[in-house]
Amino acid sequence: MTIAPDVQAPRPGQFSPRLPRLHRAWWVALAGFVAMVGAAGFRSVPGVLIDPLHTEFGWSHGTIGMAVSINLVLFGLFSPFAAALMDRFGIRPVLAVALLLLSTGSGLTVLMTQVWQLWLLWGVVVGVGAGSISMAFMATLVSRWFVARRGLVSGVLTAAGATGQLVFLPAVAWLATHHGWRTPAILVSVTAMAVLPLVLLVVRDHPHDVGLEAYGADADHPTTAPVARTGNAATLALAGLVEAARTRTFWLLAGGFAVCGASTNGLVGTHFVPAAHDHGMPLTAAAGLLAIIGVVDIIGTIGSGALTDRVDPRVLLAVYYTLRGLSLMALPALFGPDVQPSMWAFIVFYGLDWVATVPPTVALCQQHFGEKAPLVFGWVFASHQVGAAVAATGAGVVRDLRGSYDLAWLSAGALCLLATVFSLLVPRSAQRRSAAVTA
Image (cartoon, rainbow, N blue to C red; front, side, top):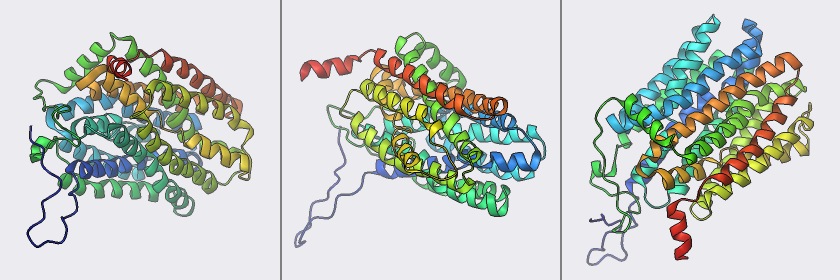
């Protein structure tokens, strides 16, 4: 195997060599990051628009929460099928179609007048589009383009969701307050379309397509040769599920990740803003706090990715779920019309843990399932979104029946402690055992 040099030798008479050329893998990762930011943009909108939609159409919190639940379920369930489609047709065409779906689904919401249209556009169209640019896409990109720094790159790409939240939430809240909810829907539609040229220009399916090896590949850690896939993508995806479901590891990871989704996207991402508003906090202030969670999460997720390269991922997951559960249990006592220091402490503490669970979960899939890890992780991520969907609807129903979200926060905290147990029960992989013996 020949690795293309990153540094060119100086010509005679040159004072110094040229700077190292940046490996193409980093440009592909950048394009993937931007695409995931765009996908996260529309998915950050529903929590801010629940009250405006309730005011204009009279739809209940549970009805609007159902649309978010459909989105979250399809966002997760379509993820493994998207991974299979990427195996069958390549990363770039799947990514391009997904961006078109996001743009179309977001743009057409400005014309809706019936609740079924809300469910179709927010739920189905955007759910499928976003599900194609989800964590399974991240796992596919990382496994093909990187041998070294996989944990770090997984953390950076996972942080794209938080970055999308950071970029869009304040703007969406301000636009919805001053210009109505249709303006931010158009903004997200245009943004998704603007990402498309970057994807078409930069993204390629595999390093071999441009005559390169994956970043960090060498004789001991070679680039995995691309596998020519044939047959129906749905069949490939379902076959991967059947094989993975025979292992205890899959069910432990899926169970923990279902709790992860319920305690983040489904509950906090969807209902934090209306819950804060129930306590007299202005809509823009609550959205700003949720955006700050996104800022802090960028640090936490990238840091988690770096730690995943060095620390047992099972231990990291146990720590993350325990801290998240305790913080959610404390949240009901922190709400008020003003943002007190205790709420700031929650925002920082919880934000560091928002999606820090993703890099260690990806690493465990890679350790236990090898080259099938992206597809298996797609199904693990599907469980994440099923958990999120249950929480999105369930918390809305709790609010409608009890007049507050308190029971939802406490229940999610208890589930996080259960996820801690699941994480510690995941078997140590052969790869980890071998490394421990060598050390």
